[in-house]
Image (cartoon, rainbow, N blue to C red; front, side, top):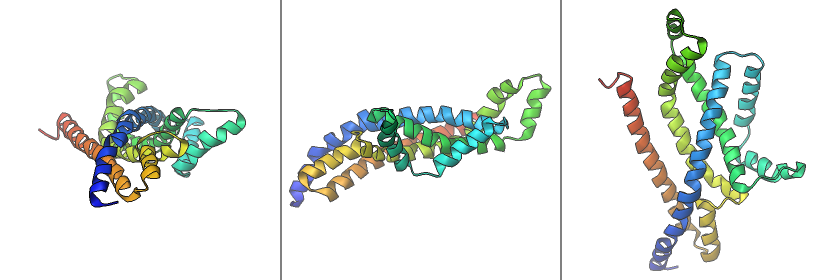
Length: 225
């Protein structure tokens, strides 16, 4: 293609790529990350509280998920489970896998943040008559989440890019939409650069939001005064 035709193709295809980004990629990211945070907090608290039995299960879960590729996990759930009679539609399958995968990584972030809170905070809560759960909910967890916010934000940004792997299980997100245009036009370089720039745009917006969030947390934490 000539330069003008490539430019026209990129302008024409921009909306075709962006719309799946807004209607599929972003919802997939937000839903998966929200569920992942719930999994991560529970898994981290189980380990922090040193609940025997549950702690070993949590460690096994983290070990398996962090030690296997995300793409393999997607294939096991979407293509493998039907062999044992479990069929899951593409979008729910992607949400399930991304949630479990991110939950394992985020749980280690939150666990490390919990352990970074000084032990004196727990003792102070006990001195004023608070129960263990009250101390965790009102004292330990808020401080830990403030510490964990930057790495958790990085995980969210990483998840935006990882959603491109969902194209391998037929989820029609941005990358698959781009692949379909490439298959029709055979103009791979320009179109893959274009979708890369859209991913970059999404991640840049999230990075800006991360910085705003960090400043607010610093302020409320007393550092910005």
